[in-house]
Image (tube, rainbow, N blue to C red; front, side, top):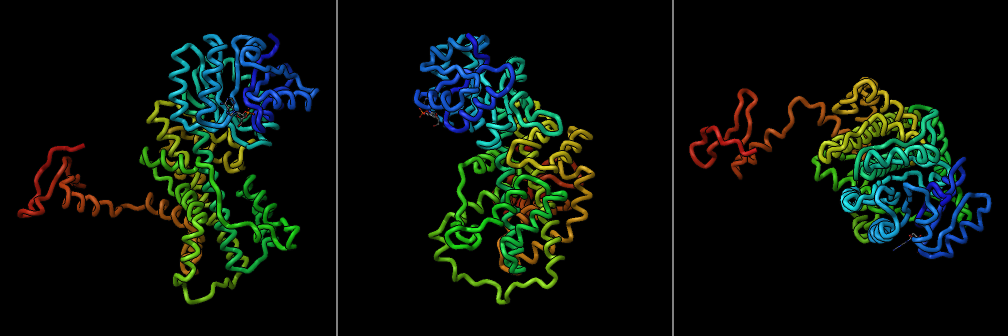
Length: 479
Ligand code: 2AM
């Protein structure tokens, strides 16, 4: 056997990952696809690459050195299970099966258990960066057992994106940890994109600037603390002219945002964990609202503000929007890291949050300068309970908060939806509040359901006899 690594599933992501692997010194890559024509095509199109094509699973297994290591790149779900079964038929205990698809982390937990019981090492790995990332250097989030990392680590480090000299890969934790972190990455990506979209909408509707002019603003922002891939490509998209109409491309694109479900997973999981990821949730819901054309079509006549929205000091307004975007972004990332922290506690993963922020600095969609600040925050305090309370972010939020409040108020007054901006601000003020009206909610719960409450002035659990003489009694602790 000549190959040290194999790839199963040679659609675009799989082919590109296989080419990336083959381009690294010392790698020989076994390649297999259910339909052999695709395997042949990859090998003939890239004669320079060290590929070993296999036309059957048995041939694939025979071409791999032990412990055999194979990365599966097929559609998440049933296909993944089918390929895992095929590989277990031809592999031996101790071999490593990596799922690089976009699996739901609970599926990965189930698979590691089932595959592990048969003596194989199963690794669920998040792969971020899309097709280009897979080819030139993705951000990789492998989970799985520790011993798999010994073989897999050096190979993954060789193909990952590099940020400031460090490869964008780390062993996240066992079983589903890698896919969990990838899921939250995607949720943060939803929030980041929605925040940028809200900023664009406010500037466009408030100042009447053209998309090309707004592209210049984003390009300018990309030179400061907002520097990121998403800000950069936003400028590119806004600058694009449509060949057919000669107008801005963004104006001919149907305004219904699609989604492949990872944002929804992030929010569903957060609900189960009781983590308020309101920015990600609003971003996900905003896509849903945009896609309900039939509801939007009957809602255009709903009353809005009487006055037209115009901004007088354009430059000051643009700067306020920038600050609101930055503050909201801090909140969105803080919420995402909170979900990872809670997931780790729930599932028993030992996740290094600073290391996670570092492997997102290159290769993936949310790559940004900003992630260095997150890494710094966790370096200084690994057990930081709320990311945005790190001194750097407290300072940034302090500088931004007046503008942020103004922008949220302005958007509300003008009748422009800014759900991610406003929910982020509400979260921030919720954290800050000395007293929350949750006390009243506890009173209501005690009234209708005898759910009891605790008191600020003494220990214990209490209940008011609402339908009797309304005296207070000490209650059994119902927790
Ligand atoms: P195919 O080319 O034979 O269709 C993306 O769909 C990739 O997943 C393709 O490489 C596809 O192979 C592969 N795929 C889908 N279902 C599969 C299955 N049940 N077994 C193996 N590969 C599968």
